[in-house]
Length: 79
Image (cartoon, one colour):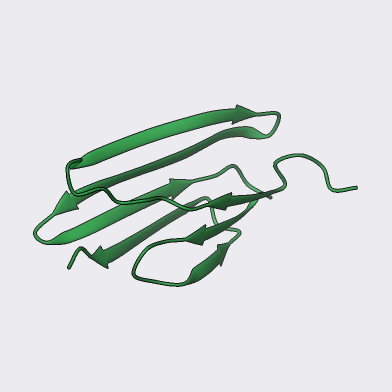
């Protein structure tokens, strides 16, 4: 089977009443961090994962991105 946290799915939901959100979870490989904030009619999503973890980011207004990088930043129109 697949080792836990080698692949993670991140699917944030952007809520009108909230301007900022952040969270994290600790894994045996390190910390997975996700945050987003609204800025100038856009939402800026930040994802930080330890090396060697694949993060699939499925976000409103976009598609699914696959990253093996440590940091990913996405800007999404909030309209």
